[in-house]
Image (cartoon, rainbow, N blue to C red; front, top):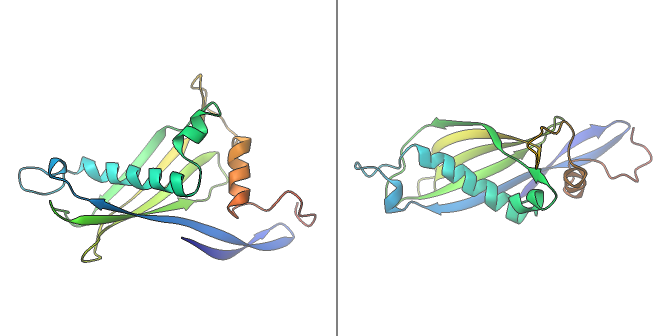
Length: 163
């Protein structure tokens, strides 16, 4: 799913897409504790399931980075728990790409009980770019800038009205 909002790129205005995926997750027996409630650490795993689905759907997965000599480790993850999920539930994780001018990848997550549609958790994550030598890259890799352009997050190179 993508939604567009007006943004101003210098002298030219264009529609900026909002990149979102929704991923259904079945709560398995090995993900719950003795009370039948999902163990808190698995919520982070569900966020990762959402990130991987996002990468597959928008053609920007972990292997795309690795094959270009870039590592993208998580440096921060936040999860705010609202309601429990239990064994037998089905969850839906909404993964939203948050565009940033800084050389990092940001995602916001909303985890729902897929049956009741109640929010059970919200969260976010930050990833940075590293070389294969594990050196921090302070600029976006060129292929990632191309990806942002293809997905309406940056103006195309051939627009003469842009700064």
